[in-house]
Image (cartoon, rainbow, N blue to C red; front, side):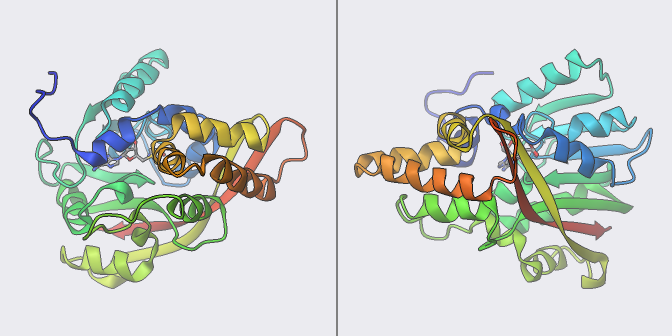
Amino acid sequence: MTASTNSPVNPNKALWEKGDFGRIADTMRESGEALVSTLGITKGLKVLDLGCGDGTTALPEARLGADVLGVDIARNLVEAGNRRAQAQGLTNCRFQEGDATNLHELKDQTFDVVVSIFGAMFAPKPFDVSKEMVRVTRPGGRIVMGNWIPNDPTLVAQILRISSSYSPPPPDGFISPMTWGVEGNVIERFGATGISPEKVGFAKDTYVFNFRGTPAEYVAAFRKYYGPTMNAFEAADKNGRAGELQAELETLFASKNTSTTPGVTSIPATFLRVIVAR
Ligand SMILES: C[S@@+](CC[C@H](N)C(=O)[O-])C[C@H]1O[C@@H](n2cnc3c(N)ncnc32)[C@H](O)[C@@H]1O
């Protein structure tokens, strides 16, 4: 189905269809696989991977034998996920388009586990997101989220801090995705669906971004392929400040790089792991 020229643009969808997030996801595969190996996923479990991108965590879930549905708002990433699953012979893993704020195509209480690693946090209307995640999880099932943490000193919050200083202020009523990285907000959002606070657990965890190239080349990849960074550069460019943004990000990436191998960049980033018992 092609979008009619009259249909309003969904900025959330447009942001993630911009560029090619898969090129950044390629640098996050090892941590995705390591994270999945800790989730107790076993053969036959029904797993929803929400905001799945091109399957960094969905494919490892399927390799453990789960029956996996990946849902993502970005059509290009859904298509890439299906191609990757097919190339790996994973007939138990499929991807489809959908919006975490309204999963109307999914029935109540369908999944044993709902996983959303840096995925659903990027949907607007966080209370709709928690409601939908709880609705599609079966009683006794689990929801696992990975959420970046606001003001954290590690990579992702710092990219956001720098980028936002070159971008116009967000529209009125905008709720930052990073608010999902605050425990009190998570408890409140799941609490609104009837989940009591003692059923929500938290842990700090680390993802490592591994890139074959220098920190400056990694910044260039973000500038070319990562929608939020592309937007920040477009805004900076309008004010003649793209060079300044580039330099600030290069300094950040170089300062966070822990690799001692020339031409390899490894950057750890802290996130909040959330586990909700349904
Ligand atoms: C940072 S990427 C992470 C993707 C994937 N979970 C991974 O670990 O590689 C964020 C993902 O959330 C998706 N996303 C953003 N808003 C969404 C929404 N409202 N509904 C579903 N997916 C959404 C984006 O399209 C993108 O694939």
